[in-house]
Length: 57
Image 1 (cartoon, rainbow, N blue to C red):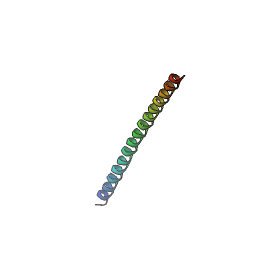
Image 2 (cartoon, one colour):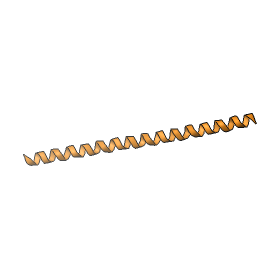
Image 3 (cartoon, rainbow, N blue to C red):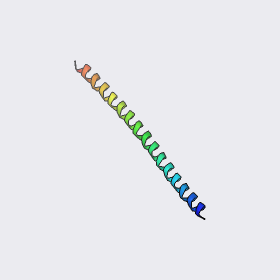
Image 4 (cartoon, one colour):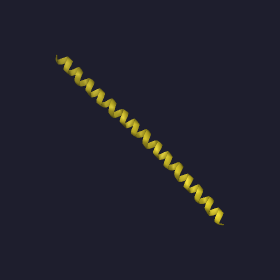
């Protein structure tokens, strides 16, 4: 019975670690995609402001 309890505990620990790992990966993906989208938006804003500045000259 002791071995069974130990295995059960170990499986729960591994399950928990896996869930944490998956969450971290998802958060990383979301963060990376958000950062790249923000960069694209900033580039687009910069580009449009350059265009409007050239149009005013």
